[in-house]
Amino acid sequence: MNFEDGILYAVRVVKGEILVCRNVTLACQRFLNQLEDKVWAYEFHANFVQHFLKFASELRHTKGPDAGKLLVLEPWQLFIICAVYGFRNKKNKSQRMVTDVIVFVPRKAGKSTLTAVIALYELMWGEAGAEVYTLATTREQAGIVFHAATGFVEAMPQNIAALYNLSKHQITKAGDSQTVFKALSRDTKKTGDGMNPACAIVDEAAQIVDRNSIEVLHSGMVARLNPLRIYITTASFTKETKFYEDLTLMQSMLTGEATDNPHWFGLMYSLDAGDDWRDPTTWAKANPMHGISVFEAAIAERAAMARHKPAALNEFLCKTLNVYVSANSAWVDRAYWDDAKCALVPGRQPEAVFIGFDLAATRDLNAVCTLKRFADDDYEAEFKFFLPSDGYDLIPKHYGDIFAVARASGILHITQGNVMDDREISEYILKQCEKYEVKEIGFDAYNAASLVARLNDAGLPLKKVGQGMAVLSNPSKHVEKLIMQYSIKHDGNPFVGWQLGNCSVYEDVQGNVKVRKEEADKSAKVDGIISLIISMHCNLDNPVQSGFGFRTF
Image (cartoon, rainbow, N blue to C red; front, side):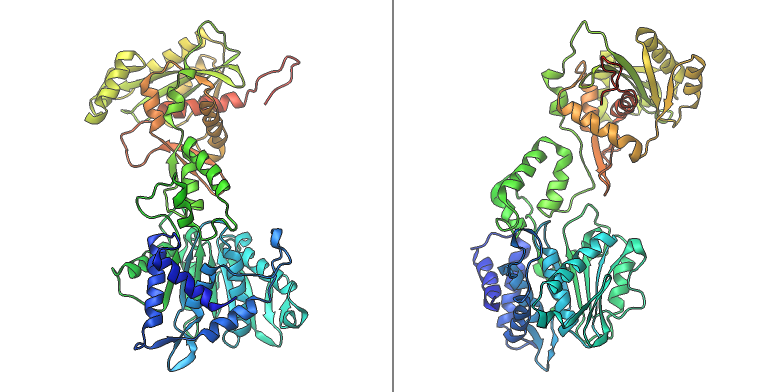
């Protein structure tokens, strides 16, 4: 490996020979400008870069198809090493110019490999008594870089491996008890208090919302001559982080909107504003490992899923193309719901019937869904909505026609008065129970006490359905799947289709989902869809019986 390949990468990017986003082009141009500047306080020394690369060339991959092979850094990684280790203070060549680094790349771009090499190098050839730490939100994430480094040491030639002491939770420099390399994480309460880091690697920094855990490490570096702080991360679903503040500042420095600080270096891969994520020619811009460890066929498969499943789009944009997006995403494409395949089939008798209702505030929309099951993949949904007259008068003008059409169709019933009289809702549910043999009626307890009491007095099978993610995630995913399979038939009333289009979905780190109203429009309604999910919860708790008396799932 040669430092010249790193510089050549910057040259080729600036010439337009390598397709990258604007931020990467600006970073390469900034590097070349610094390289040519002969009058400022720093100068480039290739020997420091080559020393790092000589060390890295002794390492071997320990996992995957390349296991056992010598490590070869890609040109973009060589460029990072040139930028970080090459520039030195003219008056003191032992002092690096760069102290703060941002490496912003998508998943599977070799983040852990690169940072593990840096960590081992800093431990051995950094400042005396070097303390090196990796920080992440969880112990498992923090341990990824540490375990990668451990693997490198175990596979080193014996004469080099003898320079390190390995233990379960730390790596030290042989003969120097003051050096240490450890992994820290928020979930173990180990975040760097009282430590004196020489190198701090913040892994998946975009996910760390507690800025104190980062600032504690950074503040402990004030006594170091050559501190090295590295953010290495993929985009996330929240911008309320210290990393995002620093990312924005770095971008402003590149564009000239903020005063340039030569101690900062950032290489930030993503799409540019206006790029079409569906265009395969843009994918390489976002990932420097495109065609190396990330293959176009795999990206194309994810893109196809994102086209047909809006809930997958944000995950694709964020983790594959490295674009910051909201945690909320569109849930299901309304085209599935409106398709002719979802038309009602007359003359059928359901195998089981469930009802779900969602009551709102006193002057807001109330929804009841009657879910009829014919098979475990064949359903019909019938909806009824109730709204007090004063609430109807408060509907925003831009939604006036939607509600007027719903009222004329009969799916929306306007009750008299300024608040909701739930007796009309109970009467409707009682009539549905006379019409069908209802197995279970699910309800959200909010504002439902009097209605539930009335239905309970009538001897109906009631069930309280909590509104937390743990309860609603599974029925929400099941409704999503059934809609995309055209397995929920309905009368095609546009009032329900409009509500489906208003739904966004929030996904937590465990993969649980919660369907809710799109926050950008407080006047939009999703009550009918929530009542459908509640009724589906009841359905899943009462599986179809097989012909032999066994439940099917």
